[in-house]
Amino acid sequence: MGAAFQRVPASVEWDASRGGGSRRGVRSGRYTLGEDYYDILGVKRGASDDEIKRSHRKLAKKFHPDRNRGDKGAEDRFKKIQAAYEVLSDQEKRAQYDQFGRAGIGHFAHAGGGDPGKYEWGNGSAINIEDLEDLFTAFGGGQSPRRASVFDQVFGGGRARGAGQASRQAVRGGDVDRHVALSFEQAIRGSTVDIDRIKVNQRRESISVRIPAGVKPGQRIRVRGKGNSGTGGAPEGDLFIVCDVHPHAYFRREDRDISIEVPVSVTEALLGTRIDVPTLHGMVTVTIPPGTSSGARLRLRGRGIALEGQPPGDQFVVIRVVTPPALSDEQKAAVEALAESLQHNPRADLPWSTPEDAS
Image (cartoon, rainbow, N blue to C red; front, side, top):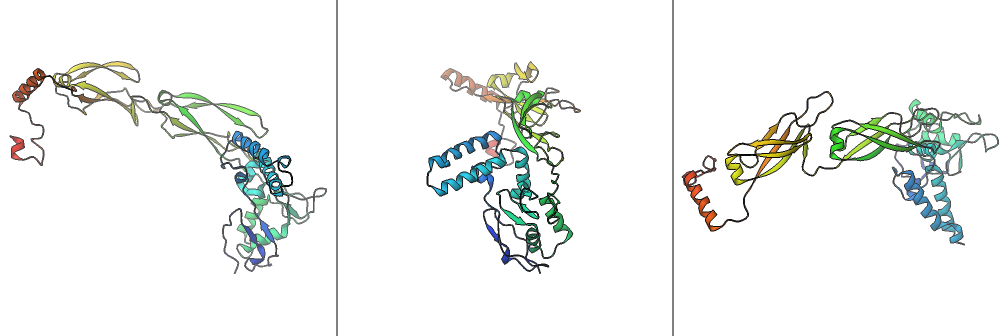
């Protein structure tokens, strides 16, 4: 029985001589996956080109041999930094690396460039193709069609021993997320944003993207074929615009509806009044009916958000009754007289009310 498949961390060496028995046996030797290029440069996997360039410049200056004469560790570190930057600064190599790791940026040796029948990893070390096939076999015992397809996918389908350089595997470009900041009004009414992207030839391209009216915070808009470049003639990935919408100073969104809280005085709530209220379409005059309680919601039909193919939502005016901060003795006496004449107890009908509360 072949050895069970186990994911091996990138910084760990796998000893092929310890692998389980296979149909053909596994040659002894060590296959080093190596450090992750992103870790070497101290950046995240989704880092921008500028972040990668800044980090490389800082680290290359720190570990440059001219500044660390006689320091073998600094020299080795500098070489790793340069190797990592060579790959991550190249859009095509970076896409291959993100897809397959260091195997994706290696190549098959051929006449004039190395020993035929060997695959050269991105770090310059070479390994026999038969050994690589044995490594895949060791993970599963025998070479099933599925394992063979995995080998072809990683190494480009050119496995003929000593047959020269293999054809490059066609790999679709990766998708890219780009966050854009939108004001509340831009998100409600729609807008156009310009996005810059770096093509595989390092040329900058500006793309105008239409943001439809009514987008929500976090909504993603797909722009097909504007992601990372593909390899081997494969198509480019897609660009996704992620909408970051800033909150409004006083409007609150509830799907297609808009709400706004408006303060009114005690007398306005008791007697009723007319007040001016802002909407998405300008100021309107709203009638507050007499006896309006705090928390009441007055509907303004059709004053909400208009989405394509749907009727517009509504705006709700939420009433907040504000009491005066202090009363004079004369005002307090007037309020007490009003309370005595009203004889109104808003808690009388509550299920937990006592007879005394109702009186």
